[in-house]
Image 1 (cartoon, rainbow, N blue to C red):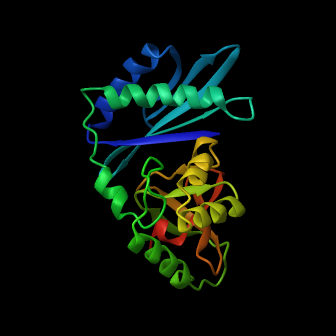
Image 2: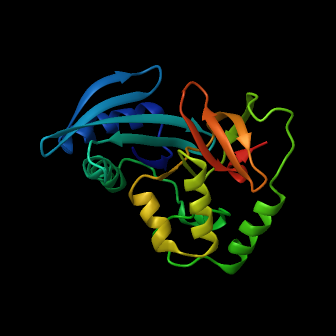
Length: 227
């Protein structure tokens, strides 16, 4: 599965209307709209494949997160990536959307900066190592439903080994390897301000979470969550 997102300052109604206009423009077809959940289900044809996509609007204190997922049958998820690339390229080019200035925010994030950045500053790497050392916290039961909210600028994976691999690439400043994980959808951005259940944690600061209202369990780092 492939993920993508963008943060904007428009109202929910404005963003929903823009998506209704842009999806047909990229040759997508809207299948359903759940206004109460701000969820749009749509399809995109890539060759003989029908790519199923979902775009959800997630309000938070910094604006509206336009968060999308797509899936395709091929192992490299080429069709899914094509669908979301077309959508988000069109959104980025829209003169109506009031996009957040995210470059400075990415520089301040202690881990998982945008993959198009070519250098990690030394103090960021030192901060990563320090945070991983001190991030362990005590809980009585690693599977209790402790509620947390997500922070801006962090990534997750579907298994612990992949997120550990991503942390290792970040520490090693191996941007190319990190970008490959993103390209193949093995890691993906977490929307900001979303409530999650904290399910498990490790001494190295890796945590297992579940987004409230879903059954999907994912792994990220402790610093991605507010206490």
